[in-house]
Image (cartoon, rainbow, N blue to C red; front, top):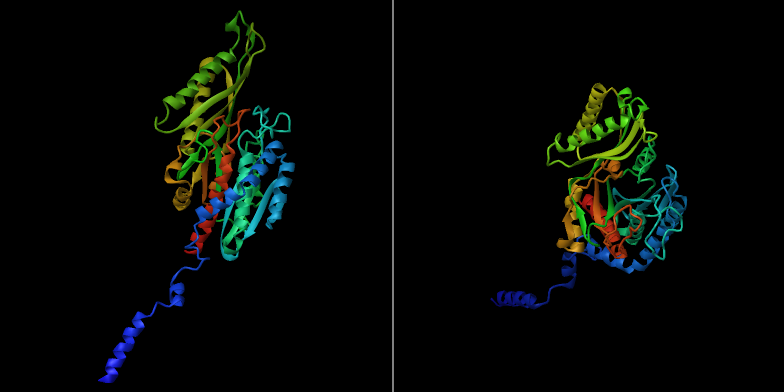
Length: 434
């Protein structure tokens, strides 16, 4: 009986002892556990800490704008920065393209971040102290900021390379703004040169600044977010005559006017009113003087849609209209319908993955659902080959893209690098856990 009483007293004594610290630690995630790591908060802190450096990077890139496939100095500057981070840097891809590889400390998937490098043939009118030093050229589309975002994201991710569950590839692309007629652009050339291989990318992220949004807000959506883009070139051949005797000629200008009017019916009467599309004639050239019936007219324009089916219907409609003018007016016509880029398509899985991350970083009110825009982007060529996500970043200030006064609120340099780094990090962690 005494032994039984002693046994129960001993058990009661054990229950009064504090829990083992070792046992408690074993049940708690370690400091390096991905579960405990808040990528959004961590990279926001990092982007804020390197803000002054990011500002200097952006301003230096803004000073030295270079046009399509001429980005030699820009490419050298970017490559030098990436090499200092200890990345595997390849240059001269498709001319001036760059690929930098950051291999993480843990095996896993491969994710890419892409920036465009080229500027526009525009005379800058911002009055900034770091304005373009290249007469007649400027970064009027935010590519200086895009490059800075990805460079800063590379630095943020390089600082945690030991815990990366895979590989990050940084792509710096030439000639996004559009190659000359009948020439291939930057994305197409990089893809042909193998930019998505060795290592093969599993996913890709990119962004574009947008002055229509307040600085720091972002907008994204699954599916089409930017449009199919095609250039159109129309030639109408008539017959010259004296302006006083129009019946003796075939007036190419009159035929061109009919063509422009009827083309617009393809938008207002040929498609579902709820489906977005644009057909713009932006240039007309014809005639020699005021008293001569114009013998020929050349027109140039663009078609923007969000589906290949509608784009094809509009092209067919234009061909039918021109054939009708040949029959009714006696002109001869030609249409060159040049497909530039398909629509940018966002992968629904990537959208759903990063949406909560972006909301944690910026707050739900600052993460908006994007309205598809009829502007184009050759990021679309990547999005047709692998799961991709492209989003808009509000750049504030208000001056339109491609305007001589365009600039960005530099406060976005505290935000965009963190979003890109967090998207890449979370993607790799998620793939590692599958």
